[in-house]
Image (cartoon, rainbow, N blue to C red; front, top):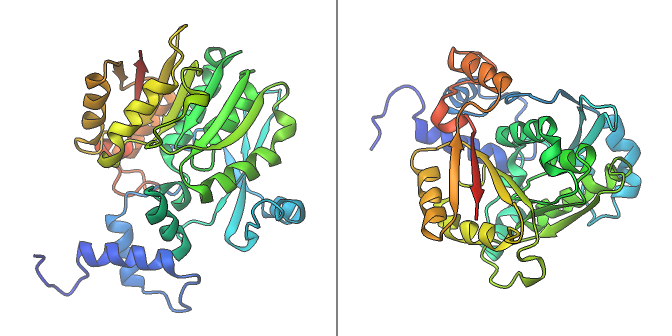
Length: 319
């Protein structure tokens, strides 16, 4: 039980965050005290690690809305478009359509209940995926001529980067949420000209799906970010990794995500229990580590940053 004071409690502030997610528009007179309190308890980053520079290009959204509206009838009024500038001459831009932050629909939660999935892919663009995408940019050779699948992709930034710059033979960008898949398909269509010879497709993939025989044992590389938070999915996720990896050649899964208490440890126990092997790397890139240290020092762009909940570790999983 929390002590009542003149200030909102942490739990009441978290309820207000949830309430804001349901509201379609903000009040004309925002609650300044609540906003300050929410900032105090939230670990959400304004820019994340920002490893790949990007900016909003809503004019691109308007130009494209006519043709893209045919894809599952997405409502452009709640969407925004970010342009990611890649440090490569092959395809210097990726356009990523996504929900405007801090907005959710009741239908999103109905879908979650129906399919026994979470809604994190629609909440926002998660910082770990930014780091995963950056890592893939720097290590393009490991994907060349390989069959790759991204799990729990959200809007699909990492998968799109792999498809654009690494010359992978195939990239499958998957998620269990059909609402997320709509956005992934939209983003694939928006960037199709940049894929060259790489085959790219969206796939609805539930980790609790028992029969995935059509794609079993075929992938050389699996990538995922921020997929180990919910412990109830750990066993199914571990089994999915084992099922998808190609046993006939060198294959591995790359997971990026924070420890978040004992959540990552519990997932890795599941990995070990089914006979898979793993290694953890804390400092895998000098620039990511530099920004991590800056956030720890109190950079205002990431309120309440702490390593356990915010810094993505690199986990490499093999058969």
